[in-house]
Image (cartoon, rainbow, N blue to C red; front, side):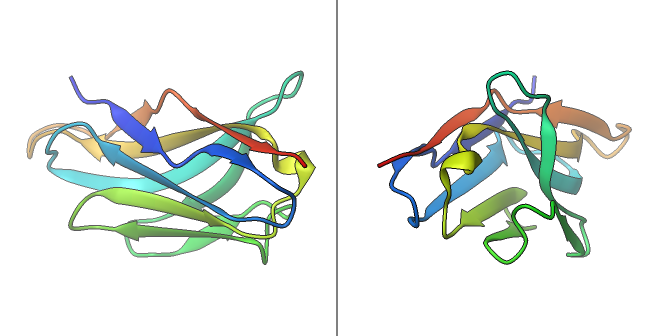
Length: 121
């Protein structure tokens, strides 16, 4: 079974930076679109940023200019560089990716278990 493994969350002061990473737990055939979502207490899960296999990106308006999504296709890994963090960025951040486990497998959407990001002084 394939899982998405996230890392890089933690506690940071306002104005600080964090870098999140997400990768499959084992080798896979290919990864399509990969992205990051977040969910704050009492709120619905929302899209933060997404990147296609060709590198096209899309961001939520609230993070444009502060967050950067990138990927390493050789490692099927997606990153989220978060700068100028604000208290309202506090949430559990989830990785999402469309993965093909084997050459003959159809793409399937996988979710990570989430990593907590807390922005507080």
